[in-house]
Image 1 (tube, rainbow, N blue to C red):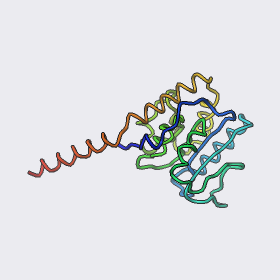
Image 2: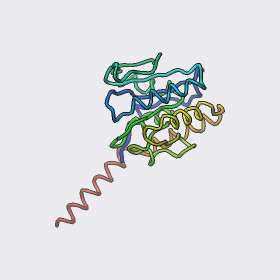
Image 3: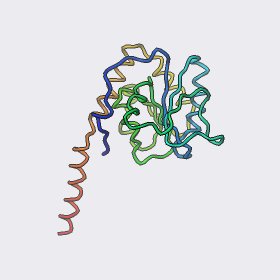
Image 4: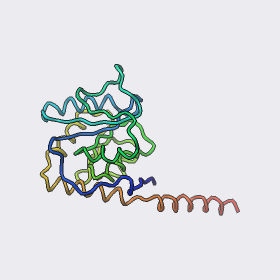
Length: 194
């Protein structure tokens, strides 16, 4: 299992933003799904006219892989700024086509942000549909847009319940537990060789 430093990715309990806000991590690498995110956001804008988009990433957008218009983009933000970026969104989109785990899922949830993610990496293990976010099929921009819209349309109380569930999910994974499980595997391997 993986985990995040919940003392670093820590924000106080909060409500939704005044303006509906979707965030995502941007990358020009094809497997990160930026093109699908772009399509989903453009589709979402048809029903949410005042939509705000925020993103961060380590690579700048390009003409081949652009950001949606009017995206507030943070290029290589310092680590101490990242929790605030996650927390400034009402829902975090993880559109990856492939992941080993997908740490932004847990980072966003630790910052009390529900997640809409594709079936890549740990999404199926971490997300309970309608509880702490939603899982959609890879490259399905229409499903991404629909699920993002569902989170944005939640009542304030229902959004807070989803936010709290996301936070609890992230706190269920610790580095201590991960280290213990790894140690158990290594000891089992050593004992099998003896």
